[in-house]
Image (cartoon, rainbow, N blue to C red; front, side, top):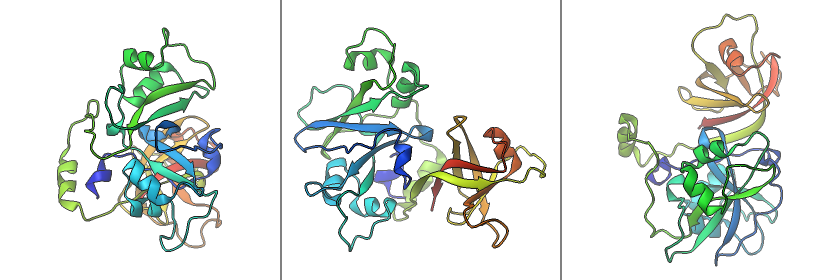
Length: 278
């Protein structure tokens, strides 16, 4: 896996309707401005931008320090073809590069977040990995009270490669991370999809493990499955592909009964959001 992307929060190819009200274009100049970001299951950060005549994939790659080839791949774009105006491009942001003080000379974006139903100050604080006092300070707030659709600042993101990154909160390198250091030439891409139609068999017995069938996800990898209606998610092991001819063509994932129970899914046909490796 590319090391520069190892600790990033990889973004998805998914329906724009899952942007939760962020359908307006995030226009920006490179002299310093605000951008609206959002969070996904597992606290991943993403920013979406509408391609226009002033901003290209190359601009986005250079400004947000994301490899250009990677942007083409996660957005399923052909690097040999021009990206059409109006195309929504998903850009992953590195949480390690988010700062909460602006007393440095480097240019930066102010990261904004739109408060949604069910959000609390503590929840946003946890997603941002920042203490309460700092988040209150950068928003000039005296209390943790939030209003629906309120726009708050959740940090500052540098526009260049020279700024040192802060250390992630409460994270320690694992043996898996150390092993990944030896695999810098291997690119494992993570994709996100919303409104994925799935199914499960009510007649199967429950177990203490979660499994999923998917035709594209890497076998043996772990898929994150999120039920937005119940705000529940599970990590299920990809054990194979969906057998041909056994389900209707629009079924994209099959989960076992245990995973369905954990997600509070009652109907054998359902919609979920997924994150998977390919």
